[in-house]
Image 1 (spheres, rainbow, N blue to C red):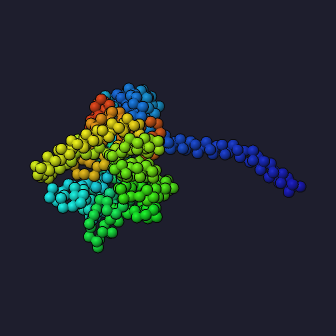
Image 2: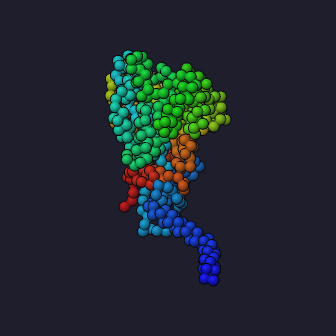
Image 3: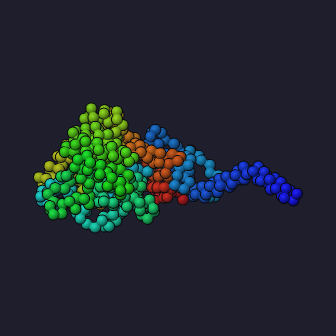
Length: 468
């Protein structure tokens, strides 16, 4: 009898436990939710206020503007946000400034800083203005090179560039390691989309190297394409270094099957492909191969612009040498013969005219475009960030409307990179990458050369505007 009673009691206890189990689960879920909410609410809150906020995508202005940031993400924006915990919220009042998203340089080379050699030296080499500096950077210590890259990354960030796509000339793993160091907070710099080594055909950039050393030298900087199978292998070698993009230089000697193999392999492994293409033939090869972006594109035809628009291929404009850039970087440091100087002045004028005609056609075509500085040059008296933004501003001088220039380095660039959900706008859910200028950049695009406030990931990098 006692055994039966005990069994009945055990049965009743189990029944009560079964009935209570859903309630216990609900309590546990509520507890976990409360812990999560507590963890989320523990993230620091920052309210950034300014007279105006420009949305590059729409061209609309919010005035006045307030942006609420929780941790490293934007959570709210409006004309007069009310915060529920004013005592626990840091308020940054930028007065009459204009807020913009952090700038994006879609084509740069942070680990290269070429000094143009004297005139006599350039005449002795193929590609003599560029190749000696490139070769020197390859044969020097990779450690020295990445430290220089870290310095220039910091200078980019201080000038308002919060994201870059680094397209080669970084050694085997220089840009991927710099990217990881920045992401881990070990050094300061923009977030980097790294491409590792450029894929090239033999004879690009460097020629007539010492035969006993040529392969080893080239392997430090490039992956050589020699047939479709080797092209696929080159993509995999870069993926081994955890790259974000694949960069290919397309000359007239690169075949469509080779480039198509690169694009197919990269896309299969969920990476996009940027193709350096200047001449019409190489641009067509890039289009036919299905590239994601075409870099430079100086000799693109109207028909090719239409094809790019139809296929959704971005054109990444690089107005680096517009407005006499070459003389700006050489006059302070080398002596030119009067003849060469005069030739360069005339060449710069012709270059400006050609580029102005190019951007007029690009804007008219409706093709999607972004902009990159292509900065890899030592600019006396300027930081890397200052020289990069000066190059990007050249688009306005070449005839691109100011709002489209701003889009090219914010919302359109983010779309090209596939990061439109993370960067390129001051919107809820995106990274808290915010810059400020004193004036109106649509009226005067050179305002972006005078950035006064920089925030990346909710962290203030510089602030020359805060009201006290």
